[in-house]
Amino acid sequence: MHRQQQQQKPCGKAGEQPLVSDAEQPILNTLISVRNRLAALKKDRGNYYRPNDIVGLYNDTLEQVRLLYGVRKSENHDNIMFKNRIDSVLDECFQLFSLFYLALGKSKEIPATYVQLVSIKQNIEMLKESGIYTDADLEPFRTRLRDIREIADNEASNEESDEIYMARPELKLVFLRLSQCEKELGELEENTRIISDELMPIYEELVHIRRRLTTLSLLPHESLGDEARAFQKRLIEIDDTRVDDQFVSAETGEVAEGQTQIVGLLEECFDRLHDLMAEGSTVPKDMMPVYDRLMEIRLQLEKLLLTSRWTLRETDLWSYQVQLQDIDALRKNGQFKDSSTGEPAPQQAQAALNFLLHKCYNLLYKLLSSSEPVAETLMPVHNQLRTLRRCLLEVKKYGGPLSARDLYPYQMKLSSIDNLRVDGKFLDDEGHVPEGQGIVMSLLNECYDLLYELMATEVDE
Image 1: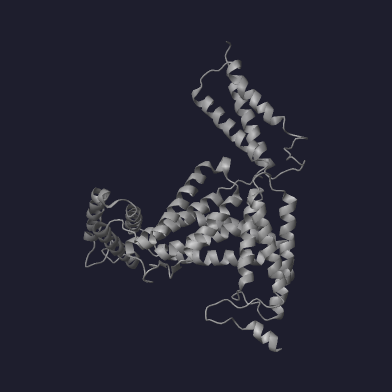
Image 2 (image 1 turned 60 degrees about the vertical axis):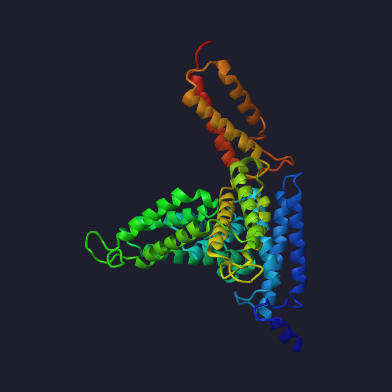
């Protein structure tokens, strides 16, 4: 009894996580082993991922989660707020599994949604901190959460309600993440919903100005002049439309809804503009390593966004996720601290660093959400067909009448791809049928249709 009481109380200092109990320790050891194995698989770029290996390891992990739920229940720790090291390791495992499932083309399955929910939450929290967003910024997250909700609800409907979280423990983790995202998104939506239709154009313009001012803070001070003065003039024009310090309806003359949001944003724009014109883009010397690191991550993610269809393995994104989480952990209450003084960095530096962090999170989400439901073993065929389709569309649009000789290279390429099929399906090196058959077959058929259209209009030489 004495031992159990010791296990249940948190360790030393306030704010630290509770200790891992003796009963939880074997589970933690197994999960660490799983995480290390996944990390090793991720680094193996010489071979395609084997679905049976990933799915088998995932099912073994789910068994550990069931054991964890049983232990937590027996120790009266089954409250969702209880967290210790085992939860952190489990979260890393599920994020890695999620990336592997995306790489396997299983984007419509529950495991693939987890890392997307993590990324969505990171983006929503950054928007909440900055307060600078429009409804259009929220729409991609709203749409994706709706899709994930449908996937999760469909999976849950196939299980008995009383035993659902023991039979499918991953659903508990996904539903918890999903509910958190939906709740925080709803709070952001409410802030824009109360702004009147008349003030919405002003609000959206101020959001654009505020973002542009943050972007300008990354540039040399001497290059800011003309654009900064243009923004100053426009802000004064917007401010002059107020009557007794309030924005009023042009039709009724009454005070329009959304004063707090509009006035607060206008004043923040004035403050940022003043700081920018006075200080320029100065980032303290102590903060430059963080700034340089964020700039490097941003450039790498932007490059991946351009070349991802040909070069990206979804598991490659894990290293960026870890780096960004490490940088995010440097912040206290949403602010970066000067390492030499312990005080918050100047406002201009805060704005620049937070902007870069949010930009990186957003790029990471775009890469995750752009993942095709096609297994990586099938991606070479998929990419070739996309390129061939684009060429045929260009020929159809600009090529004019073509001869049989002109069309021959396209026929040969299409035939060589079609001949890869076995019994109508594209197989991997081990003879398995990889995910994404429907998408690839649709592309193949579309290429044939385009080719037949061009052949119907061919001319004699």
